[in-house]
Amino acid sequence: MNARERVRLALTCQRPDRIPIALAFWEESFPAIAPQTPGDFFDLDVRFVQFKPPAEQSDFLSYLRSLPPDVHVGDMAQLATYHEWDYHPERGPDGPLSDLHTADALARYVFPDLTHPDRYAGLAEQTESYHRRGLAVAGSPPHLGGELYETAYRLRGFQNFMADLVLHKPLARYLLDQLTTLLIHNALILARAGVDILLLDDDVAMPTGLTIGLHTWREFFKSRLTDVIRLARQVNPELLIFYHSDGDFAAIVPDLIEAGVNVINPLQPDCMDALAIKRQFGDRLALWGTVGSAGLWDGGRPADIRAEVKLRIETLGPEGLLLCPAYDLDFAPFENVVAFVEAARESGAGHAC
Image (cartoon, rainbow, N blue to C red; front, top):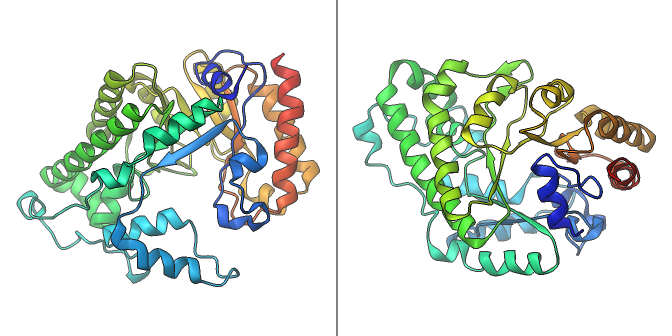
């Protein structure tokens, strides 16, 4: 069984030959693996494709790459996205659209050109090259930290957008409609390129629950998410849908299933009860992540990571599980990452046979 077959079985709640694995970290955090990618260095089951930044960002990207290695600025792709949308969180809570107060004013705003053919040139070829190697391919649309909710509140400013959802609903709907149109266009590009998994991302939760009410999420986001998934699957009926949110988003899990989501991520164990979700929805929903808190990854020992992997496999596997750290590994010791990969392979193979 190759990695692509293994991932598809796992994400459709079936039993693969072993539990597949992935990682989640900023590549510059681990220069020891250069020049290899994390996927090749650790022989992971999933590879990722994404849109290219616009050509006019070359100077900005060159500046970021010129910084000394001890300057930790974060994810290069994310910083390029901020630059493209003229989003500057270092300047305060306002966003580039904070001064607009009506849908008519918003209609005059020119959104970044995310759909130029140069941005996705080569996606299909890159996907096919991974498929020839028997690898699963996941693709992410370009966005400002999250496709709908996060992009909207970063453009408007968080407080402004929270008020929009209650007091200025026409403005909120117009903005979300424009973002949804962009998302649909780019999701269709990825579906036509042949990716196996469409990555959708919106941090709608904090450690204690949703950052907006469940009714508000359903009113503004559920139908739009459903439309994106439905249209992408018209292009590729076999497309698997991944949904990410940090924090505790258990309240919307039934709605995500109704919208067409196949797998949720990352199920941070200090925020969500993955076992409860597995027991209730395990025949319809796969889990991607589940391993470790930020404190465990950064301050724990390799033996602690191995024990955590073993626990997740024994309680959540073998069907419907793709093992991955539940946090981005920005500062985790390299030996902890190696321990995760080794333990996942050793324990995952034993429990999936």
